[in-house]
Image 1: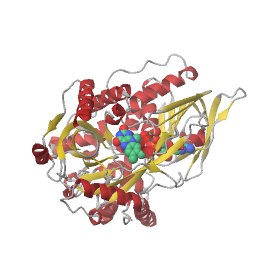
Image 2: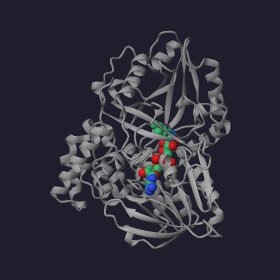
Image 3: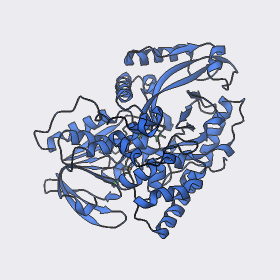
Image 4: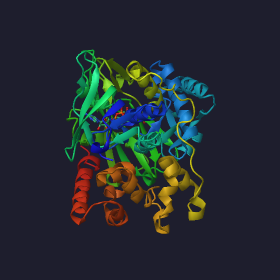
Length: 521
Ligand SMILES: Cc1cc2nc3c(=O)[nH]c(=O)nc-3n(C[C@H](O)[C@H](O)[C@H](O)COP(=O)(O)OP(=O)(O)OC[C@H]3O[C@@H](n4cnc5c(N)ncnc54)[C@H](O)[C@@H]3O)c2cc1C
């Protein structure tokens, strides 16, 4: 389906295909609205594929006294754990406590007790230094008082966005989502009320004008390009957060390890994810333009490496072993703090005559934010739309086809989490050798041709960086697998030899610029 195939008239148009836009699309579709989502790049191209990938209760919010926000986040975490197994999975965290840095045992213990009370399960525990070091043998023992274990959850962020979009589409043709379509402006009637938008396919330059009653501006860090903040003193402050990705053998662990950076006391984490280790994040003003893909800087690399070496002095973790990096932009409101990490992380919703701008939403609380956003848009929407749905987020998954294909249970669970009821389709036509994981990852080869055929990719980078994540997880972005990927996906993509060459070159060039590993400073 292209721009030219869509109807002209919609109840609601959502601009931006990150987690916020995808969440609104799903809930609006469920309410029976005719809703169209338009994304300028690829789905989840923005911050929603570049996060720390945690579905978390927000322990930091407690420190800021925002108990309500933690409450909502913990509730949503528990709901996602119940309803999206294979996509959102429980993750244990270890947090060492030292005599001379970070928060103390009693402060942390009170915070974790509150965290567990909200979740209604007693899930944290304090260990003395000896016991803690059996859980985390590589942690620095200098002035170690002990440490906590607690639980949160983790996700494949881009796949969560894609699963929400796929789920929304199941409501029928009145719910549509297109990538590579830019919205430059909003048209209004004589009274100033929203009436529609002109939209352009960013690659074919096909143009369409759509009519709509209401628009949701879910463009994250780019929100002010569509609608400036109503408060001149409270503009968006783009903050960059970057991560390094290592193979898990550099720090073998089944728990995520949190620690405080020696230079500024900020919390950093080393998190096992998809067979690799994510290390992050930084939190600094993003001085670059907001159009190009962000990338980690040498100074950020040094900062993260310094944190790692300080926390794990008995290991010689080397940048040479690093697989990749990625950087995302936080849409945070400027409240006059000079230290980026002290700025509030709460979302904002601005309503202006049929245009609802929503930014600053988290992965964790996307469903709640979607409901808040739709409530704000309600006066402009057709009457008679159904009330918010209280049932499960996703439709039930089809019967288990894994056994006959010999797929092991954890892989089937993972496929169901990522693809929902299409999981069976992913493996149905796969040759036995394509039901094997790509080395060093949990991704099956069979996921590639499925995504290439059914998941609206335009470029090889869409496939390798967001439909599957081997661009982050395999050495040099999976360069050594490109021949096999081409052989697997060629039958389902309309690309000739020249196009394949162009796509491969463009992908490797992009990877080097924005996902590679620069030297530290
Ligand atoms: C480093 C980092 C780590 C984080 N870690 C976590 C975490 O662990 N857990 C958590 O819950 N949250 C986390 N967050 C927060 C969370 O990732 C973001 O707040 C969230 O992804 C923002 O989603 P969004 O949909 O609002 O914005 P985005 O994902 O940025 O989506 C906005 C989209 O709008 C598109 N767009 C922009 N302009 C236009 C236009 N004119 N026309 C059409 N489309 C347009 C962009 O291309 C983009 O894809 C993290 C954030 C960062 C930066």
